[in-house]
Image (cartoon, rainbow, N blue to C red):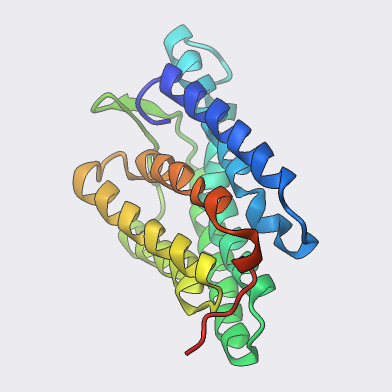
Length: 213
């Protein structure tokens, strides 16, 4: 989590338990990629916990951990979420539209992560939260496109659970930006991690149900 090592490790432990419980009740292989999301966020929160400790102790692992966290935050999620939406989408027209979002997510993910690789900077503490510097040439444009391709793919989906995740994602992004704009990357990842818990509570029998209309 963006606020402290204790909070990060607590969130990671909680999400690990939820993630394991979620996988335990997964009955269809097709849904595995969405059911594993809480566990991925658990690992990401673990990374931030280690980052807090590394910064506190002046460890040489701060930069490698920053690389690892931003790999997920900047590169992995804008590719993974549209892909999951595409995999679970049964309607051909929607699949074609979501496929566009997949390519968009790949492009944005590459641009954002490569920008960091070109000018790597260790995460630092700003406003009592972790701050990841965005060195991309068009940060605001790429951030908007990131949200568009990541959340937009879910909005197009006919799967209710994907739509719900997208709605929570958009809401948490707006809250993060309004309250913690400087620390947006870290704070939004925290909200997204908490949001992933809803996957466990969503009825399995409805997971692949297509919303009419």
